[in-house]
Amino acid sequence: MGPLWGLPSIPREFLQVKDVLQLRGCDHKSGQSGREGSHCFKESSMLQTLGEWLWWDRLWLPGNLTWSALEDSEGRIYAKASHLYAAVPCAFCLLLVRYLFERYLATPLANVWGIRDQIRLTAEPNPILENYFCSQARLPSQADVRSLCKKTSWPERRIQVWFRRRRNQDRPGLQKRFCEASWRCVFYFFAFVGGVLALYDKPWLYNLKEVWEGFPKQSLLPSQYWYYLLETGFYLSLLFRLSFDVKRKDFKEQVIHHIATMTLLVFSWISNYIRIGTLVMAIHDSADILLEGAKVLNYAKWHQTANGIFMVFTVLFMVTRLVIFPFWLIHCTWVYPLERFSPFFGYYFFNFMLMLLQILHLYWAVLILRMVYKFIFSKLEGDDRSDEEEEDSDSLKETNHKSHMNGSGARGRANGH
Image 1 (tube, helix red, strand yellow):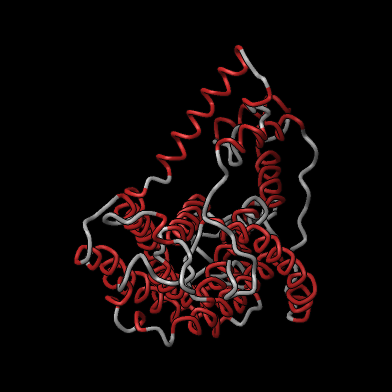
Image 2: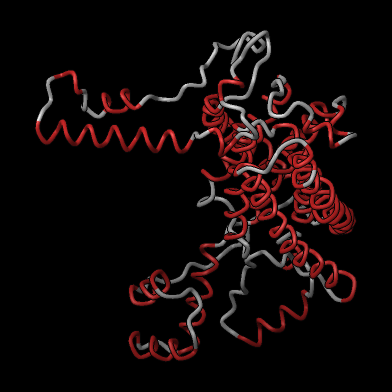
């Protein structure tokens, strides 16, 4: 980084083509000849061409600026791609902190609040049904149920119960949902506080035109470095945990969101869009605190408090994601830069990724408004995104009776907003 943070200086230069070839055993000076030498020469040329195109100045920087203009000099430190290497160990550190938090804080708290996983009956072993469940569908059609009846010699009702129990086996327990929501709530809280501390005294928080003052030759501040490192490490840790965390109905949208967020973080760092990047992170964290907090309280059956927080979250989400984000921040990245330089690839790419995030915001806004409508005019039973646990009764009449008796009780409400 440089002397400002007490870390060793990391140059901007990336791994040279020669170094890559030596690692792959293609050193021309070692006497290689014939086909191997020709192959290495072609590989060298391809890698060099690809590297030159990928880091071509005209793609990422405005005007006649080159990467050499962003080299550290005269006490000014600029963001470098190599700084992002620290996000990988940061992600693993956050995974360790999360494990310790969930094991020694969230789980005991769940026990104190009486948050318990429901007792689930295990689906009896049946290779034919298991193969169908894993390779074809988790919820068979009526025609497939009849076909499976013939293959297994089981009655139709027994097969339906088997699939219901098998689906429940794959659903995360209530304690796992509580621990995950608790961890995210705590992280977003501290991340938002860190963002406020990093931004409260900066002129571009109050005047968005200051975001582009002197761009891209804007010195990197220690608060910006640590804020970016923390957020990048966190979203990287979420990508590492995708296959283990609670999967909701908007799982694909969540994957797109995490990838788009990581892309924006990396690109904005390399191209020195750091000022606008910190603003985008701060407005996202502000609403996410309330969302995860409402989930935590709902799992603990503090329903009235959770519903109140959810309504506040809805208002804050609509203001930050559907007003401030598009009409302030995207306007800032779309209009103000053109007052200083001509558009270039990086300008279009950054705005495209912001628009992709905005499309996701609109999708989630529809889900949230649907939940608000149910909350006001009917009964809100859990999260529209949640994969709710099914009743495990062999009797359809008994299932309907329980559903009627429970209404929006603990089972339905426990899935959280």
